[in-house]
Image (cartoon, rainbow, N blue to C red; front, side, top):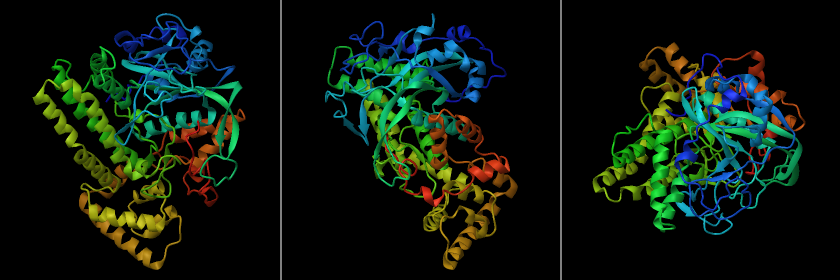
Length: 567
């Protein structure tokens, strides 16, 4: 799959000049720029964008950028030397100053527009013009595309300043949200969940922005104070940043005949998606209609697998709109995300998300996004009835494909060769009644214990004798099935590679970004190391600190148990 990078035996790119020579801009070279854009990238005021696939725009450099961290793991995969992260020119570029670069890398970046749909309903009112023509990358600016270690990657600055899509905002990201996104992307990669990646994180030593946030130990649902935050730029990397919302935008323009080239621009962006994200999966010699049918199959396979993986590791996207749904089928946009600790199918970390984007509703949200993908691409098959019928059949099979992936995931978490709905239903009831920690419970279950007492380190409440007896009966039934399926040692080992030991726990992340705001990045780097090996038995010191239940003091605390999208 396109989200898996190739390992590098040793760094081959050690200088900034060597890095620059890897630039190769397929998006800007093959797609259409907004004809109303400026040529020099000085395009920072909110405005309507009526056509084109991208707007050339310069990022706004951080004042006095300072290195926080980089992903050594990802640098190695890309064939980059770790020293590059500290290189003066490299730091300038990835803290927003493109004047530091030279050909073939360009001194202008680009932002893209997209549509917004929520659960299959398109919205335009979030756009300040009421038309949807001002909605897109408001503070994310791509600055590099190239071939690294044999694979094409795009590098995007999050918090890189205003673009025509900024909707009147300041275009900046704060250090708090930047630390979260940086750590989360690499944690998800270590978990084996398809994701955008983290490259570098720089912070300004002098520039701040004011954001609403939570006071210490606040139990408020919404932020209750204003906080001055250091401004940061994180660089996220992916094969592309093409989203379902982008396809929707071009389909909407085609439907309304917004301009003479609207349908052709839709065809171009879909062709570009296939080239960027599905080249290894779709035969380029197929006629275009057959490529689209295959695209529908491949995207469905990736999306259903992705959401099953999210549930496997306890991840909740929080706000799974179509503009947050990568058309390449990986996790994108770590804003109001969270990881389930006390098991709750309705877990939702984002105060603005509602039940429809909760933990166990993510498969339904994914289908709504897939529906918008299907709706957007369909006009390109209007003249091929037979291909359109096959395309529609793929869409209609989404729910069944999703169900199969979810069932396969639950069987793997339980160490079983077959999904057992009755066993799982009873387990869910017991998990809810005992308020189990989702990650610790399944990790302890991976040892295949004979007695329920071994699982109680994952319980947040004291159980009754009656509940213990129910647990013991369930455990015995489950163990009987496991025994039938084969070697216990092998099944236990497999379960431990399915059920991670080390989880993202917001109450352990908060001190890291709080210390980082004071200029101490020690804890950020420590978390980076621990979360890089989530399935491993790490040191006793690490286990004592990171493998434990959430303290009661953090329950229902704003900024820890729940948070707004303020970033």
